[in-house]
Length: 283
Image 1 (cartoon, rainbow, N blue to C red):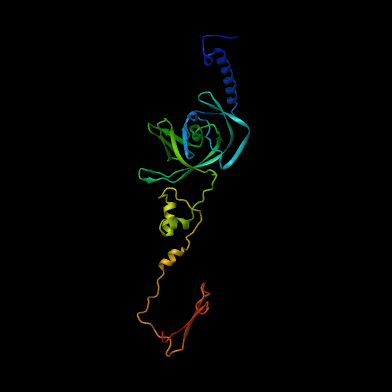
Image 2 (image 1 turned 120 degrees about the vertical axis):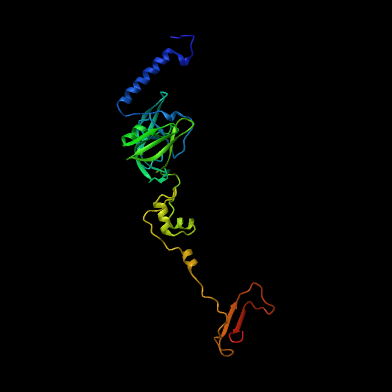
């Protein structure tokens, strides 16, 4: 039946139909096989190492397919419900190790903390990586918000601090353990030794293990190595004698000979080689 005097989007018939669909999908969510996300509706896409704190998300979510650990593709996509009643799909899940960058807090250096994010959903349609507050609290972490920052606390230790953006979202910067399209090679201990101007290997270990610098990683288990440049630099040459010592006592006792050629251009006499004889005593 056709009705006039209103726009299509405000049609009461369509509204009833939409309400019916939403209720039906909501019943599926009650069966426990779906999820909810709120912050992902923003149009600005976040970077790979940015994770946005979402108190409305029921699970951790990422738009990146290159989840490293235990990725499992769903036989059928799982539905995710957004705050604006849109429905998007998750195509798989896996575990992501998020290593929180060490920062200084009240003059003290914090040790790197690693939290294993179980069941991180892969959802290509979202614009940001989402950290679920309920999922973090289930891992015995505490999340505290204030006007400008968000503190993630575990075992009584602040392991990361999120900052409030102009978009009114809290974001934390992490070092996600992803498989990149181009493999990043971890520098060796010797490479760090050269980069730091041939610094002592013991000091390099102290810098890395004490978290005194940011982003310094090398292959674990490496020991100090010999550096050819350092060895040469520490060598000393025998000083040149002020007076030469004679090895011979009479002419023709020792003759030095050398040959050069063939030459590209012949001599006037047609020769291609030069042969020299030098007497050691009379030279």
